[in-house]
Every structure is written in C-alpha cells, then in structure tokens.
Length: 260
Image (cartoon, rainbow, N blue to C red; front, side, top):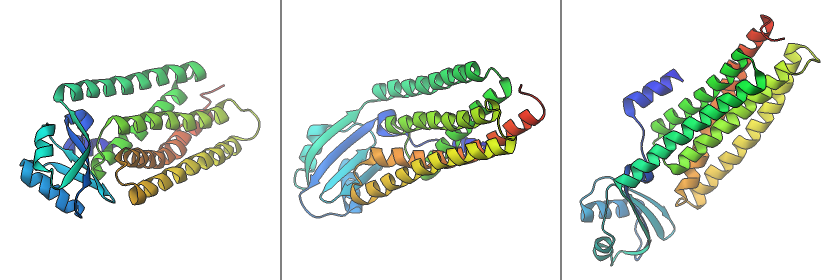
C-alpha cells in the first residue's frame, strides 16, 4: 500500500477524457489502415501530439487531448474516415465530474465506516475492515497509474464496486471469527477462508474472461476493459489485505481477549 501511494505521488494518475477534457471520436475507415497509421494521421493533420487509438475491424475509436471542432474534423478527414460519433468534453464539465468522484468515494467510506462500527461495536475489527478497504483502493489506484489505466467515470465505478466487494469479504471473515461460537478459532478461520476464497476466485475468473474477450474480440469497448482490469487488480489485492493482514489482526485481537 505504501509503495502504491508513493508511486501515485511521484507519477500521478492518467485521467480519462471525462476528467481532463478532450474529444472522443468513433470513425469508420474508408481505406485499410493500421492503428499506428490512424494515430499518426490524426496527429499530423490536427497538430496534436496526445492522440490514442483503439481499433476493431474497420472501426476506430480516437481519443484526442483538447477540444476539436467537429466540422473541422469532418472536413480534414472526409476522405479517410466516416464519423460515426463525436463527443467533446470541456474543462468545466471535467472539473464537475472530478468533484463528483471525490464526493462518491468520500461518502462510500463514511457510510461504510458507520455501518461497520454499528454492526460490530468493537473498535479493532472495525478499523481492520476499514484499513483493508483503504489498502484495496490504494493498490488498485496505484496499479492504474502503473499500467496506464485512465481514471474515468467507468473506472471509478469499478473502484466503488471494489470497496463494496472488499468490505463484503472482510465482514464475512469478521462475522465467522467474532459471532460464531462453535469450533476453535483456527477452524472458524479456515471455514471463512474456504468460503471467501471460493467467492473471490469465481469473481476473478469471470473478470479475467471478460478482459480477454474484450481485448481480443471487441477492443473498442474500452470501458469494459478498464472496469475488468481494475477489478482484477483489486481482487488480487483483496486476497492479501483480507486473508493475510485482516485475518492476522483479528486472530491477535481475539487471542488477547479483546472480544467477548
């Protein structure tokens, strides 16, 4: 978690078009072109260096940094492209979206914390659950920075899903250890681990399949690719934060008589 936060502080995050502003254009190619050729053509004609392209068959999705006039784009590329969709996001809208993201994450953590404290009424396990969620989120965001996954409305949705899933496995573990009375502590931990790992690996397998299918068959579905990538990273980090860190904290807490 610490390494992830340090990486973010040094290299920052790659913001998507929804947050930093820009133009997203989906076009149909009038002639065969490779992805690099499309990117270079757009860079040369618009004089903009920050251009990214993803392709599927004869269709390309072009992400351009900065605002581009639609009529100008149509005129410049009329012989090469047929424009299927054109969307431009201004700086004002992107600032509003970023503010909404901060509020969403803040309220998610506030309500999660209140709920956890209300359910368990015990400071140590409640803090352990919250710390685990923070670890999951920080590792996922750090990995987004490392692998170039843009911070967008879609990826923030994946982060919120990750918070919910991480808390779910932590509550499963905490409930089995603190609320159940039959069996030894190790037996209860093993039972919780077996159930939790089954859930996590099943979800992880589904996300890996989704990522591969999108990457191979529908590369223009960038939103699905980003969501699945974030969830894969987050689920892997959840294995560490829940079944190593949180389990260790709870066993220490119970063995020292910290829970009746």
